[in-house]
Image 1 (cartoon, rainbow, N blue to C red):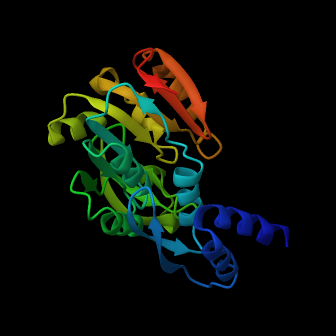
Image 2: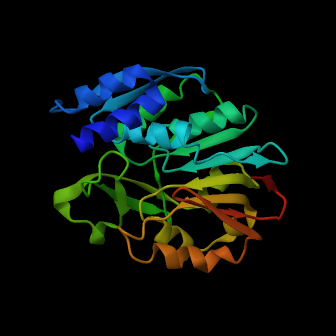
Length: 256
């Protein structure tokens, strides 16, 4: 009963009385079921999968506003790494309509929904790939952490029983080169432990990012915290919102 009551409160917070229906229905589902909900900030419907982490992702982004901040200047380029089904990209597109948003998601089912959810925003560019420390193919694996928990792994590190498919692993430098970018105003990273490879890989990109927003996954991948500390000194300011660590290139870059 306590689990049901918790879900009722969470879903009602994000979806009103329709959320109560979602909470009750989710308890009896044997397979995920797609539902369409209207997202006021994005000004359009989005598709979520009942019985998955999609509803919690929606709550984190639109109700908890984990990615809310006020830049002094509107961002021109946003890289959304670990874009999942596109909700963070929609949030950024609604708040910063002039920004070019590159949404990178490795897992096939999430990427399919990302394309559908962001289709009406021409400034959102979906790329099916994994942000990585080198340019190479990697395996997408399912460690059983729901739809927001897929991980990228080197082929030699991935257990065959949990491999979903392979995908291109791309460095930030490569993405910037292929997209013709000189600077990334906002880099949001929620890549389920891949931050170890990305930060340890270093690269010129670290000096060409204005604001880094990173969710760390030390509980699943030891070394994530240490990898961030290796690059944190390149940024002038640091703070945390929810599970996300913010690193800003310049002081007074943002109003928080």
